[in-house]
Length: 423
Image (cartoon, rainbow, N blue to C red; front, side):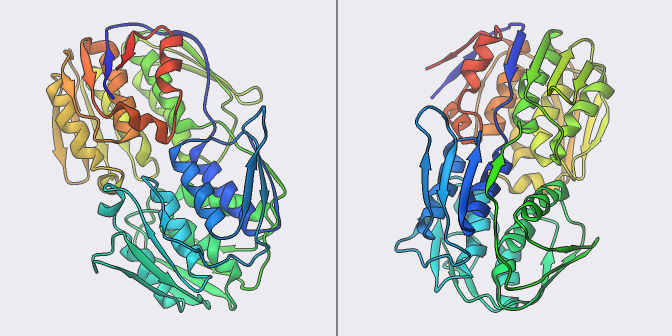
């Protein structure tokens, strides 16, 4: 699918889609217990993969007719051995979380699309083996297809924290059902820590006890899950695109449904403010209003907010001066190498971008239209769409990738006034 974008401004109101991160966790945690309801979930390609995987472990999941609310009949702390291979499609979250759950069963094979089969999982496999499971990559390279055989008993795991917090969240979700206590010791800096904190919050809501430290977590074994009802908050990662669209075009937009949560990507508010946009947020109503203007380049540490990097790169390409993104090496291990992808594609559009091992240096200027590659990556496609609003005459391939996290993205952008056509 090709998305064609012309120069245009945006205005009006849009509701933020529900959080993908919270939806994944709510589905799986509710499925592991007796069951319950997940209200206002994001039903996208990625979260549908988690629904399918949860059903493979024995949960029964249905959707309310007139709403997207989910009704879940859970496994009661006893996930079943899947009858077939679990295909996570393009969802790295599903792969990591469900690999850990598989260590509670007699065994499972997990794989996904060509992108998933390039993503590293070595730290998680190492930790699962330390906890008593048999966990390995069929190609012996730490990448899917993965074979996981239980049972995970507990003990001490030493987890490398530099690649992804998803490995830690996966251990948080599975280890309460291990026979014995689990100690998870983080080796090095834990990147994307806010996502792990989201998992801790939700597990606490489900009645799970985890002793939290800076570099060590203690999880008692033999616990039970109970998350009866959970409402998914609006997603800051997805909200960053209409917010950035207003910022780069000097427009005014309100994004509704953005309530306070532990999402690290709420940093987009501070980033836009520091760059010169006028941002106001009513935390009680969830209304987030932005008015764009002349933006200034800044330095941004992306250690806690990897999913914002494509958006930040576009903001930097339009801003005066230089925008520097640092501490972002882990962004290379997402659906694609997002540092390299944004450097290459924004350069095609006339931006001056220097790619560093752990970040980007972007000198803002006038962008021009170009045919650019979306890398089958939802965040690359949406960020380049925002760039196209300023550049004009921009064509983005693999545009269907937005279905991973924001299925209505192009429709919502059009409703705000963006001149976008999808072929």
